Length: 182
Image 1 (tube, one colour):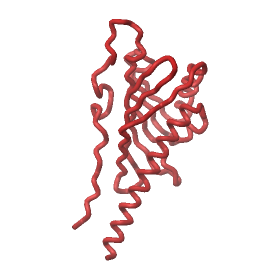
Image 2 (spheres, rainbow, N blue to C red):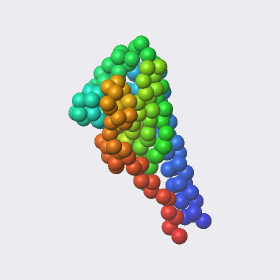
Image 3 (tube, one colour):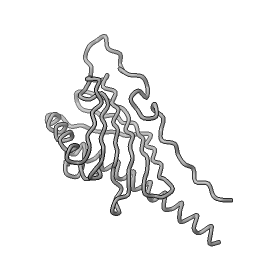
């Protein structure tokens, strides 16, 4: 009976951690759209890493930023450049895998960003960590399908192959199924 109770507690801890990670990810999306810059930066760990693939848009470069101090100007510039239009980030296929220690989790999710003028989308991949009782993003990789923004008529609707630029070629983080010892 004691082992069963310990196993149930472990399973509940992982479920609670998963829900908390989803909340942190949703905060990221809401704060991004609501232009709550301080709150947005607050979902990142102090030493977080941000990667944006093929950014600046269409450059072919992959930009990397380390720490809240370097990440903040990227989001501030995004909000400034979109001051005449509001964005709405929609996320789907959210996969969160909480590691057995319940202190680290992997994230993958698709997203679509809509404005009155354009539509684009891509994939988020990252890692969250429990820091002082709060799940924070420690690494976030944003792979955007910028092709939807390209006005040239000869461009394909999507300008890259599925999963191009993502960590796992578009596959979600693998889920570590809980396996009871029996």
